[in-house]
Length: 65
Image 1 (tube, one colour):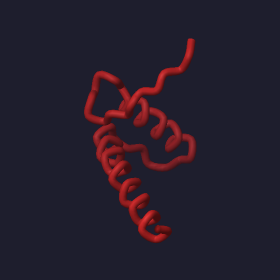
Image 2 (image 1 turned 90 degrees about the vertical axis):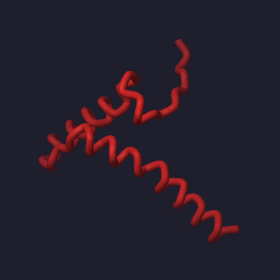
Image 3 (image 1 turned 180 degrees about the horizontal axis):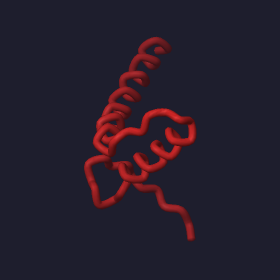
């Protein structure tokens, strides 16, 4: 089967995107003996990543252009 691109949506709980990210983040945290986080905290962090990427991109374009 060919891979299909899907869009990340943090607010749709039926796609399990946040559940997957929370599980893998907590597995990694447990592996390195650091604090695990709740699903709610993961959702809050994920919500801040896209605006941060957009801001960084705009700053780089402004500096280069």
